[in-house]
Length: 327
Length: 181
Ligand code: SF4
Image 1 (cartoon, protein in one colour):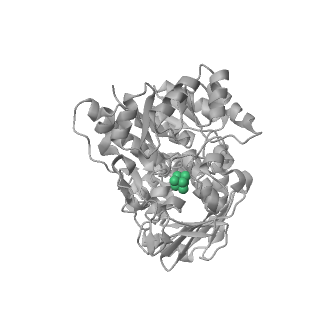
Image 2 (cartoon, rainbow over the protein chains, first blue to last red):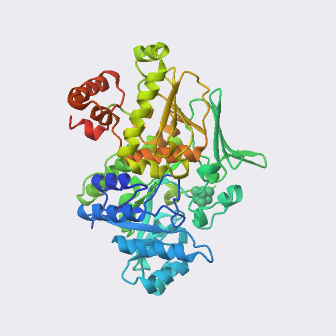
Image 3 (cartoon, rainbow over the protein chains, first blue to last red):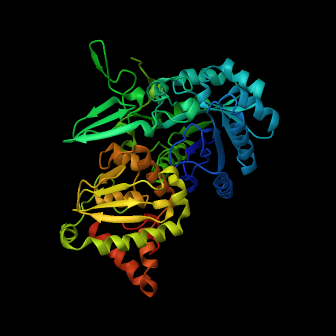
C-alpha cells in the first residue's frame, strides 16, 4: 500500500496548496493555544476549518486536527470545545497528547478517530499499546529520537499505525518534555503552543553580522553571507567549559527522503512533513516532492533526487536520529 | 515562478533612478487608495493580523531609494513612501523588491528567503510573522487588483504588467494566475 503523506497547513491557503499538490492527508489546528503551532497570523477559525475539511474531502484528501497542547488546570473547557469543533467540522481525526483530553475525547466523541501526538513522546510499544487499549488510539506519531531499527521493532509489537517525521524543523528532545523555551521565555510548545516564540525574538544586523536573540539571550551570531537560523534554543551556539558550538543540535532540518524505502520496510504507515508555520509555496514544493517519491516507490521506480535544501533551516539537512550518532 | 529563488533579480536601474526624483506624495496617496481596496476585498487579511492590525510596518526594498511605511489601521490602511532609510516603525522587513513582491505573490517561501538572508527582519518579529502569514493566506495578486481599478483598460493593463514582468524579472502577479493571462 502506498505510504500516506501527511502535510502541514498553517492557513486555509496552505491547506488548498497541499491538497492540490497531492497530499493524502493535511493536518492543521485552531487559532488558539490548543495547538502546538500557536503563531501570530496562523491557523484556522471554526468556519475556516469546516471549509478546509470540505475542500479536502471534495479532492479526496483527509484532514487531521491537532489539539496537542496540554490543557491548563481549570481551563479544560477550551480544549474540550476544540475537540467538539473538530468533530463538527467533519475532520477525519484529532491529534491529541494529554491523557485527560484523550479520556475526554474517548468518552464524549467515541466516533472521532484519535491519533497520539508526538507531544506525548510515546517511544516504545508498551506505552503505545497502553494508549490504544485505554483510549482507542489508532495511530501514533513517533518522537524524532528513534532509529529505523527501533521503529521496526515497535511496529512488530503493536497494531497501532505509526507516523514518522520525514522533513522539516527538528525538535531533538523527547517532545512534550523539553523546558528550554519555558526557561528562556516563560512560554513552551507544551503549554502555549510555541517554542522559542517570535514575540521574544530580536534580530540585529551590524555591518553584515547578524545577531539573533531569544528572551535577551544571544543564541546565534552569523557573519555576512552565512545562512541565518531562527534562534530556536536547542539549535543555539553555546559555550560550555572550554567548548563553544552547537551543543545540542546544529541548525539543520530533517530530511529522511532517502530513508523512505527503509521506513516502509519498518512498517511505517504515514510520513509526516513538519512546517505549519511555513508558507504555501514551501508546502506545495515539499508535498510534490514527497508525493513523487512515494508514488515512485510504489511503482518500483528509483526514488527521485531531492531538491529541497534551500527550503531548510541553515540550508543544511540531516537524517536526524534515524541514522544518528549522538554527541 | 518567474525565476529561481537563488537568482533574485535587482530592480532595473531606471526605475530606481526615477524614484530618486519623482514626488512621492501623489504616489503615497495612490498606494493608500490601492491598499484600502485590497483590504476591502480581502477582509481575512486584516483579521489574520490580529493584534498587529495597527502596527507600523517599514518595508524596505533595498534596491530602491525609498521605503514604504504601512499601517493597516484596522482595515483602512495608510501608506507613505519616504526616501529616509531610517524611517521609524515597529518592525522592518528589508530585501530586494523582487523578493518582497515574490513573497506577496506566494512565489517564495518567507522562511527560506530569511534563512538565505535575502530578507532581513528587525524590530517586532511577531508582527513581521503575522504580516507574512496573513499575506500568504490572502493569495493576493497585485497586478489583478491594479487592473481592476482601471475599468475598461483592465485587459491592456494586465498585458502591460505581464510584459513588464517578463522584462524586469519582478514577480508582479501570482505565478498560477499569470499562466491564465
Ligand atoms: S527547544 Fe528544541 S528540543 Fe526543545 S521543544 Fe523547542 S525545538 Fe524541541
